[in-house]
Amino acid sequence: MSGRPALIRSRDVKAIIRAARMEGVKEITINVGAGSAVIPLCPTGDEATIDPDDSNNSFDKIMKKPGSV
Image (cartoon, rainbow, N blue to C red; front, side):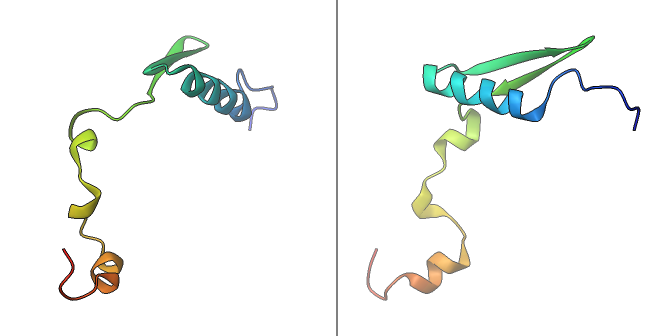
């Protein structure tokens, strides 16, 4: 460890993400030093089209009653 303070703390990032979600922002860009990080906040692509009923979760299979669809 370098012993110097961090440029940004994780709790600051969490607060930024929480505020952005409340405002309905789709993605945020956080600049840290010379670099930056882009954080998407909404589902994109395949993640948005997954139907929860089509999951392969074994717990769902156990809890499904015979004859129910």
